[in-house]
Every structure is written in structure tokens, then in C-alpha cells.
Figure 1: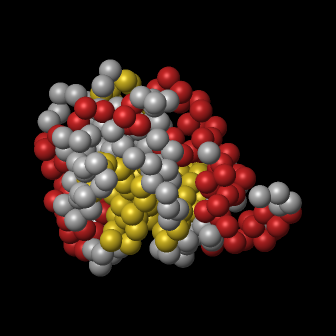
Figure 2: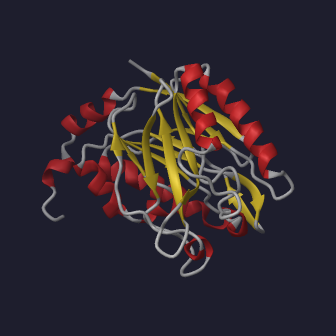
Figure 3: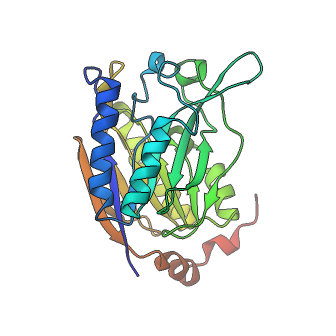
Amino acid sequence: MSVRVALIQVAITDDEPVPARIARVLSLTADVAATHDVVVLPELWPIGAFAIDLMPVHAEPLDGPLCQELSRVAARTRAWVFGGSFAEQVQSEPGGDGYYNTQVVFGPDGSLAGAYRKVHLFGFNGGETTVMSSGGEMVVLPGPLGRTGLATCYDLRFPELFRALVDRGAEAFVIPAGWPERRVTHWQVLARARAIENQAYVLACNQTGTHGGVPIAGGSMVIDPQGEVLAEAGSGEQVLSVEIDPHRVAAWRGAFPALDDRRMG
């Protein structure tokens, strides 16, 4: 049975106010979710992945207004909403409030199906590392794509994370991102590599536009377990829609059982 998947490649610019973007994207998400089984949003879409100064300003708790609205969209449309990530505020951390780059997933009943705090923070002691704390837990959850592992943007460069998710049963990966244009070839190669080496679907949803002075690549992709790109977005705001068959993962792993031949790790 096929699953209707949509990746919403959101355009993020400095001149669009954050409240206006949130309202616009929530409305778009509701429209798209009405005709799809799974909807995926990009990383930090409310503020932009490189809008470092806005992260603490617009941070919310996990039960805040943004997640409540995403939950309502999922419940109203009966879709799975992979809500991208947002700046999560956690109160009563040692030394004051803490902040995480947190990916959230809502099931078709509106319940929070999963939350993943980004493990690998980008910035080399700058960027989001100056504001965010690193998460420490892996997340694999059941859903229409099969067992689905969560990762975010820079995590794509760390194959050991994906291997660990496969060891926990992952058959698909959802990867929201804010990947810059200047390294778009890395995005393309790494996303396909994670699909090929783990024999799993990859749903990689990027931002587009320019914010914080950084042009963002776009190029969101849905990649099958053999590394074939089933659908790829351009460089502008776009809804990427495709039907996939989750059973192809087990079929390919059975026909070409490379994962059974692992000897290290």
C-alpha cells in the first residue's frame, strides 16, 4: 500500500516577520496535509536555521502555541505531521533556561508521537552551538513509513547515528534541514549515501531563501532504499509530493542483505 508523502520546502527570508511566517506555513501545512498521509517541514522554519539571534527570542516549550497548532493540524486532517524543528525552551535547567533544536512529530490523532533534540550542533563553537544544547537521545517511532528514525540537518554528516537508528529498527529517516547553498553537493551526496548504506527511505526536507546573510540550498529529496531520487525540489519554495511503498525496504534488504554482513560496530 502506497503512502502519500509531501515535503514542504519553506522559503525563509529576513523581511518576513516570524508570526506572519508561522501563520502562513501552518495554513499551507493544513492544506497539504488534507491530501497526504505524511507531511514534512524543514528545520527551524519559524525563524530560519541561521537566525541565531532569534533562537532564544522565539523559543517555546514543547507544549507551547506552535506545537499546539501543529497538533491541531494533524488531528483535523488525520495526517502524520513531521513538524520540522523549532527552538525548544526548557525551564529549570542548571544555570537558567535551556534551548534545544527539537524536531517534533504528531500522529493523526494529534498526539505527540515523538520529539528529537538535535545531537550534532553546527557552528564549530559558533552558530547554534552558542545558544542550543545538544540532545542525547535517539528516536525511532512507528508510523506509515515503517519504523522511522529522526535526524536533523548537520546530523547527516555522522553515519554512526544512522547505523544506530537502524539497529533500533529504522526503515526510513526523516531529516529536516537548513542546508546552505554553498555546500549543496554535500547535501545531495550524503542524503543518498544514508539511504544506500542503510537500505532505507530518506525524506530530506530543506529550507530555501536567504536569512542571516546565508543563501539556503533548497533541493529537498525523497530517496528510496537503493539510493534512487524519487522526487527532488528546485531552489524556491515548493511542495514536493510523491507516493512511496514502505514494503520496498524489506524487499530490498531481503534481496540484497548487505546489512547482515556487518562485522564492525
